[in-house]
Amino acid sequence: MFAIQADHWRLRCPVCKSREIHCRGKLVRRFRTVPVGQKAVYIDLPVQRVECTRCQAVRQVKIQFADEHKRYTRSFERLVLDLSRHMTIQAVARHLGVSWDLVKGIQKDNLNKRYRLPKLAKIKRIALDEIYQGKKLGYLTIVLDLQRGAVIFVGNGKVPMH
Image (cartoon, one colour):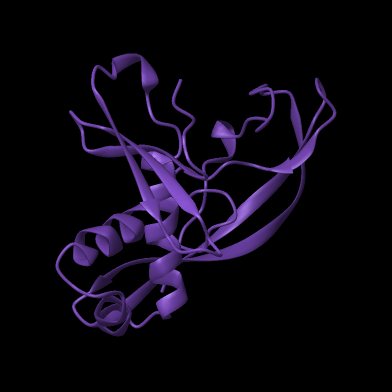
């Protein structure tokens, strides 16, 4: 367990980045980080709540080493993703001493970030595949980028040919 403090002179408004702020209390947050050997490591950080005199927002300041609403650091997230290349979700969870849901959530967020919005401007060749799923489900249409092998679109129904 490590306890750290943020530099008071570096505080800024998380909305407008102004230095014209008033401190409005602290909340201690605990973050999971990369283990040392087989020992779990946690960081306790008192996160400052600030009120901005310029935009009137009252928020917690941003944390440099972790994303909002996450209870683990970015380095822990990278470790989980690196281990996931070689191990199953259950094996990674068991090795790090965390829940299966946490590992799956990290993988899901990463895939969502990487593949949510494909860059359509660079596409030169596509492949179109229609899969018949049976009488009740009908057709499933898949559009692929042939150069990257990425899925561009998945939708129900058959593509009308003119």
